[in-house]
Every structure is written in C-alpha cells, then in structure tokens.
Image (cartoon, rainbow, N blue to C red; front, side, top):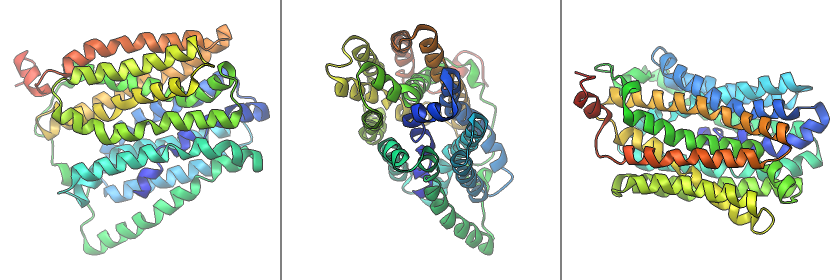
Length: 391
C-alpha cells in the first residue's frame, strides 16, 4: 500500500505551485503545459516497457527501481534551479509512477491470489486518497518555506515505500523464489490483434476521456479557479483536492457496478455528462457555485476504474487481457498527454480558459458511441473471431 501512495503524489503536488514557480523561474504557458503533458506520456511509455523488463527480472526488483526513480525525481525537482531540471526531475518521477502502475496488479496476484478483487479495490482507493493531500499542503508549505521544499517533501513517502520492498526482495532471494512477471501470468498463448478490435478502440476512448479530463484539470484547475472564480492560491489547491476527492467513492463503487450492471453504456455516458456539466459550469457561472462545478467535473474520472475493470471483463484469455491492457493504456495516455498542452496553448493564444473547457466538453460526446460498443456482452477475442480476424 505504501507503493500505491506514491503513484500520484508527484502530479498533485506540482499544479498548485505553477504560479509560484513561474514567478521564480519563468515557466510560461508552454512550459506549464509541457509539465502537465508529462504524466500521461510517461505512463504510456513506461507502462508499455515495464512488462518487457519484468519478464527478465524479479518484479520486486523492478518495483524497487521504480520507487527509487520516484525518490530520485522528487529530489531533482527539489533542487531544480530552472525549467530543465524541473522537467527532468518530473519525468523521472512520472517514469517510476508509470512502471508502478503496471507492477502493482501482478504483485497483488502473487501475494494475494485469493483476494485479488479486494486488494485491487484497496490500492485503487489508496491511490485516490493519496491524490487529495498534495494539493492541500503544497501552497502552505511553499509559503512557509519554498516551492522546492513543497515538491521535495514527497520523497519521504517514496523512501518509506522503498524499505519494505528491499527487505521483501532479499527474503525472496534467500528462499530462491523471486518471481518474474512471466511466472505469474504465464506465456501468452497466441497473438490477439487488439488494434483491429472495435471494443479495444472504444476502451481507448473511455480511458482517454478520463485521462484528458483528469490531467488537464490537475495541470490547470488551480490556475482556472484563480482566474475565473477569484480563488487565492491556497483556495485553488483546495479545489484541486475536491476534484481528486470525488475519485474515492468511484474507485470503490464503479468496479462493482461494471460487473453487476448491464447498462454499462449509461455509466459511460454518465461519466461524460459529469465532465460536461462541470466544464460548462466553470464557463457559464464560475463564481456562482464553483464547488459544485468542480465536484461534478471530479465525478467524470469514474471512467478510469471503469476502463481498468472492462479490460478484464472484455477479454477471455490472459494473453488477450495483456494485449488489451497494453494497447488501451498506451494509446489513451498518449492522446491524454495532448490535453494539458492544448489547454495551455489555447489559453496563451486567447487569454481565456473558455475555448479549452469547451473543447474538453465537446470531446466528451465520444462517450456515447464508446459506451454503446463496450456495453455489448462480448469479448475482444469473440469479436475478432466473428470478423475473421483471429483464429
């Protein structure tokens, strides 16, 4: 669970401090947008690379390297004297987080084979809870000391997570049972051409919508609330924490809804509708009910746990689940990386957040066809066989 705590802290700790950092070292809209784009891009790249590395080395060892990268990234960010160092430190942090995203599920399967559902729900909830706190304390700590300290303090949690996994790896090696990913899931039995599946592309859209909305808000919501709602820097951090907090109940409830509720399309459309309501509220009446608009937008990322659950539900084999997971997360996070950058560029070009928010709202209409496709009770394998694309 300590590892799960570290999978989002570096993201939430940065955006409330963008204004402070910009005043100190000069980020600009392009630099801030680039930093906002880094998390999903690093998640995509290292999410795809990590399974390959984990086939050669014990997954405990790979996780230790990932946590060490998070720790090192926090320290580099804390010592940053300019944009290049800040970007490099952030990239190192996000690379470790991207690897950790991939490693936790097989580790749960290894250590809790009879409680996979429970433990997955627990660590997803821990991730959601840990997303709350960095925005809450980022500005107060920066005001009391400096933004360097505010960014660097999260390295303490990475260091704390490192110790038990080093002990565990040493114990595994003494017993001679350190396990690679391939020993847990088995060699894939055949190639599943998921890139030719409508279900796979619909899941890409679902996860992409969640990721574009979430990372655009993590990158820019504090700035948006200061500009359109008159919030102070500390209040803007509270709004970001509220946005993150809305992910806690969805992390608990949505996976169960996916497995028990037949009208999945309605749940997908509800996620898109929450996003749209929040975006339009911030455009049309930002000072009237800002808490409501942020809370509604924060409900939109219910699409994230839904997509992760559907990856398993809509695949019939382990090889199918692996192929689907890699394709969906890789494609979705690459697309999601453009969201924060696009928001920053649009604001820089127009001087307003309205075009970016309206564009995000328009993209949510893609949830309708995507929901209709993923709601069909069939797997990727059966779809591809029915279309003559797989033996």
